[in-house]
Amino acid sequence: MSFIDNYIQYSILSPSAVSVIGFSSPPNPWNLTIPSTVTYLSNTYNVIDINTIAFKNCFNLTSVSIANSVLTIGQAAFYACTNLVNAILPNNITTLNDEVFLNCSNLPNITIPNSVTNIGYAVFLSCTSFTNIIIPDSVLTIGQAAFQQCINLTSINIPPTITILSDAVFFGCSSLPSITIPRYVTFIDKDAFLSCPSLKSVTFDGNIPSISPSGNFGVSGDTAYYYKGAFNTNILLSFFTYVKCIDCPECVWKCDKNKWDKYKFSSVGNNPNISYKQQISIKIKTTVGGSVQYGSYYLGKPIQVNYLGRTEGQLGGSGAPPRNKF
Image (cartoon, rainbow, N blue to C red; front, side):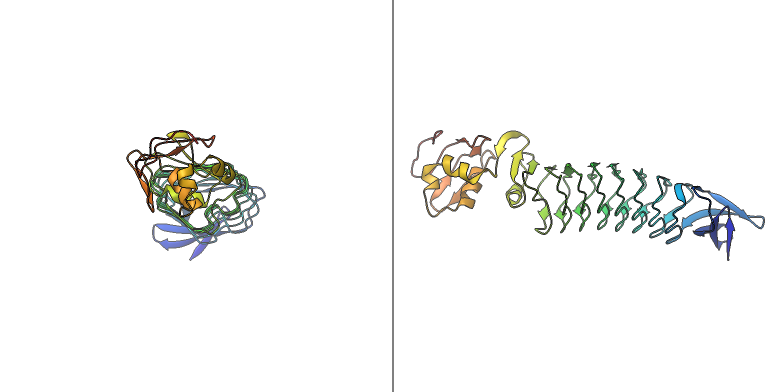
């Protein structure tokens, strides 16, 4: 059984609870408040749910405030509410279901409650007015394309609880200049950062995760930053123009090849058995006590390359003396 009250259509779920299932002839503009209770035929019901597509394509809707009694907001509940400029979410929901705010193109920002643990597929896709989003540390998963085509987004945090950056999660965030990858991220899926031409600075807060080679990073002149002691840093060379150690700011891994050819160690660089890639790998070995060995050439001491291309360190093997010049 269903009924309408104050332009909102409800469905009775039980003797004490109702779900919001739609709307009927609302005013324009419509400042919607979804109440915690509603009375019908002398019975008072708790409003606990907003159903799938309940307000889809409601072009009159300009703001919505949802009572904390609401525990679930269904898929595409506010899909393409293109005139929505303000949304206040309840503080008891745990999931933002798929496509909830997809194509709410005039929504400038939103506060995600600390109760939310899951952001679903394409929740904020094409929210083109977003500029700054804060994701609370309660969030454990962010679904595919969750922030795709948020073309004016300039700042967003990824909480330290996230372990996977899903397919196309930031696809087309063309104004995003920088981002920090949290330390527990283990995998960046394909196209996560495709078509992000402004993304020139990416900081890795821990070990470097596995990164899909499809559609990630690769903006000309971009820089990856990492902390000393991080593992898997070598894979960054495949994605970024420059790679820098935050604890050693002059350390640049991926230097210009012409500069490298000019400033390489002759006793390593002139050996035809050591490839350019291996030379770079030797160059970037900066951890104290580490070693790199290719063929008969062994570097018992770390080698550091600074931003001028100058190398410092000691060549090992065959009793080679320390060498700090070229």
